[in-house]
Amino acid sequence: MLDRIGPKALTCAALLAGIAVPAHARAQPPPQPPPQERPYTLVAGIGFDRGSEELVTVYLDDGSSQTLRANEGFFLEVGLGFLKYRLQTVSLDTTTTIGVKGWNVGASNGSIKYLAFPFEIAERLTYQQVRFGAGLSILLVPKITSSGVLGGNDVDLKSSLGVLFQADWIGKRTPGRAGFYVGARFVWQKLEGEHGTAAVNANAFGIRTGVEY
Image 1 (spheres, one colour):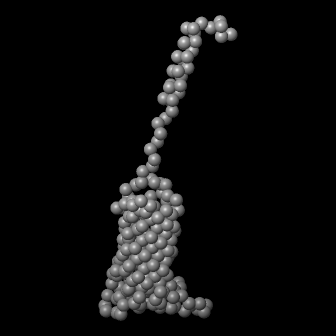
Image 2 (cartoon, helix red, strand yellow):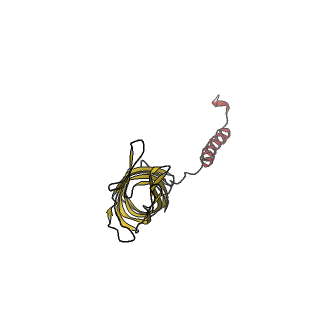
């Protein structure tokens, strides 16, 4: 069959083939740039701190008891991570959070409650899927309130400055996307009454989890 095709036809066919390849290449979308790490991080978390110092024990009619410990309770926190800096295999950042912490003992006819608003700032170091942090924890306007048959035990406490240590597992993060964390913490703190009552240890060990974006 090739002896029946003229040289001009072969030349045209070759030109068309050469044009078709570049046209197909131009139709492909350009490569997308890799996702960029955000300059700041929004933080939201929950957790529970168990205090080491017993303040009061309440005995119930069924024979059980409940103990209120200093600086113990569930907490919610929100905050911001910023000042990110990467150094080879590790990264550094600063985080600040504000939250609310509280715990309650007693029954329907009387209870004693602890409430505080922790403000925390920490420097964090991340290596692969783990992160460590250390910083300050400030308990704002902590107080103990009472009601019912347990009334008369209200105590206004001084705002307290303490030291915070954290260790988290953060998993494999994708820059620009939300990520979860779960970890443990320790707070070294003291609590003192507004009217000169003796300071008590308010050290607490805790667990926490949350999301960052």
